[in-house]
Amino acid sequence: MVDSKHEQLGIVRQCRLLSISRSTFYYEPKGESLFNQKLMRLIDEHYLKRPSNGSRQMARRLRRQGYNVNRKRVRRLMRLMGITAVYPKPRTSTGHPEHRIYPYLLRGLSINRANQVWCSDITYIPMQRGFMYLVAVMDWHSRKVLSWRLSNTMDTDFCVAALEDALAKYGPPEIFNTDQGSQFTSLEFTQTLKAAGVRISMDGKGRWMDNVFIERLWRTVKYECVYLQEFETGSQARETLGEWFRDYNEDRSHSSLDDRTPNEAYQGEEPPILKAA
Image 1 (tube, rainbow, N blue to C red):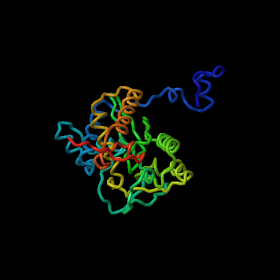
Image 2 (cartoon, one colour):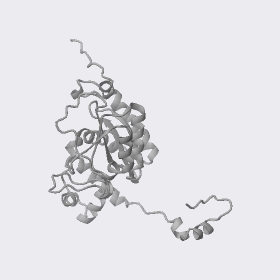
Image 3 (cartoon, rainbow, N blue to C red):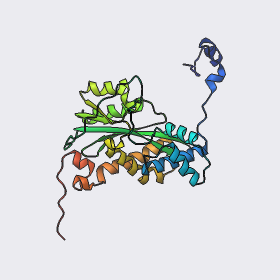
Image 4 (tube, rainbow, N blue to C red):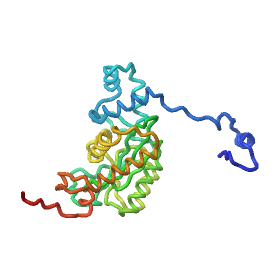
């Protein structure tokens, strides 16, 4: 609300009118220490291999690697990264107490065409100094990444922006599946889907297999792109990830798609015919 370039009111006067101190206006929150960022990178790598490990197992593993950390610190960092241990729980909890949780609609469903089911998820992206979050929208049948966005906060806006981009480019799917994260259960996200006439499906709490294809995408993009880079800026990360996603959609064939690329499978092209040697 304070405009540092206001021609008539100085910062002191604006702060006084808003009943806030100048120190509040100039305050910049401190990011995580380099040590914590290193821990977050290691937690992320280990989580991709063993998503069932919680903060206790994660802290034990870090200590075996020579990092003197307790469970409390690891638990806080995992929450900051937006990851939780994946295992069956006796009671289903919700990402936000005021948000509606929708039923899972994919159990037993034969998914055999493009735009039948889309899915979305968020993952943590380590940077050289700090971190960002990546959201992607994927077509379940073809594995095509329809849209994606990077953000330095886990807010709802960048998820809605990715969704709106995919809807504008490809039209609405029949069903949209996500986990129960507060970004996806938010009114802004669900209303965007409802306005497009899309049925909403949500995973069971702690069931990463319900959204397995995008979980596999995260593993691939991190080992083939993110972990091989030292992203210094958000613009560098966006450019590099953009190139990777283009290559993934256009040039990467999948055996499960009869050796077609995601673009070819999405467009319904026939599998390539191999010539005899």
